[in-house]
Length: 574
Image 1 (tube, rainbow, N blue to C red):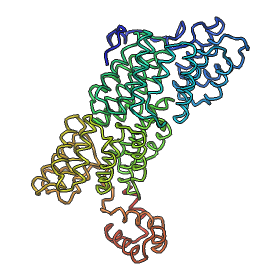
Image 2: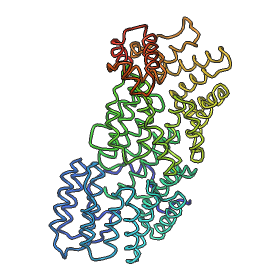
Image 3: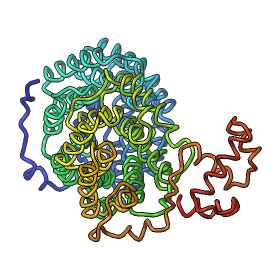
Image 4: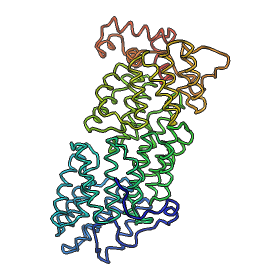
């Protein structure tokens, strides 16, 4: 793909421009001529949205729309509908956009206005209904001979979502949309279509994705109005997000920092701060990750709150003896529309459940992988496969086979594939797991590298090699304050004891390490709840004798304690 011909200013030039409320129609708008009486209302609503008062802004827009006369210009209704959806995105306010936008579309007279409102509704609709709505918009734009409208509608159709369209079809549609946008010379249409195509390429793991995100992020003028800047910020955000997913953390951090300088309003600044927090977490700076995540949560930005919750949950998993899953659980509702972040949250939650000795800790992981397979997505689900491989290599064998056609080839995806292949092979996979660990060290993603060094140590051909790898893992975990992972190595019975070993971190000293099997954990949790051996047998569909034997072994692994003490011990180790 060749770079757009629109002039691009350097980041330093663009960052110096003061952000302000639009004084004219937005470049992104399909409303060419807005009534003079409506313009101050739109500017007031926009100002409300930029300062975070999105509910009041939306109320103003909805009430204004309802008060328009039947013969009001089509552009007035188009402008109101467009701004309502943008303001909603700024503040993560959920409005019932369907009847509102459908009503506006039913009240306009021209095909291009109907196309504009249907396009806007399509962007706000559910995945299942979006293709039909966008096809309606496309038909209206074609009837009106509006090339710009056709271009951005095709661009939106290209965006990956769970709507049954194939990846190859999306790419074809996206390229057609971008070609039309370039014919128009419209900078917003080019930026929109370039970003949508780059997103499609990202999910399909096309090598050109990062390059095309860079192009898409740099198309718009240096200081577009706040409405038009929405797509500029979105492209910049997705560029950073893709670089993060590929393991290019230096690029991701740089793009996120620039995004904070360029963005309009606090919402986007918090989203970029959340990307920075993800980068800090991956690169082992847990203090900066936690601080950045807390800053990203200090507002009503839904996506930023969800991403920050993942980071805080992951940091708590390493730093706390009893990590509270609440902050992670609360994040799920904020990212349910973003599959990549949702899959990452499931991976972190599965790791937390393993650490808390919960029964069936991987229960959400396989369904999430099945969803990725249905969507044909080649990006963003890899952590789920790694979690399975570290906890249950037998299960990972099937995952490796079923997901093989979709495995991404970017640096981080390749490292995870090598790790999973090695873990599945057992002792024969020692060299592969070690290679994966070294790849993660090079990204750098040190804590993941340390975990794989520890796993490689358990597969090593001799005790000397195993202990050398465990010592490398200990050094990494000490340097980056990964307390839980450090404690796991120090409690490894194969570790050669020496005078230079560090102490188990204070945060982990009360954490139980009874070494329960998956079935024993299930029995222990039920016994701790007060269930009898007979009730345990019935719930787990095992014999009474098997249930009694499991309870006996659990008690022995906890030092022969009575069953009534299990609840307290499990709480200490949760």
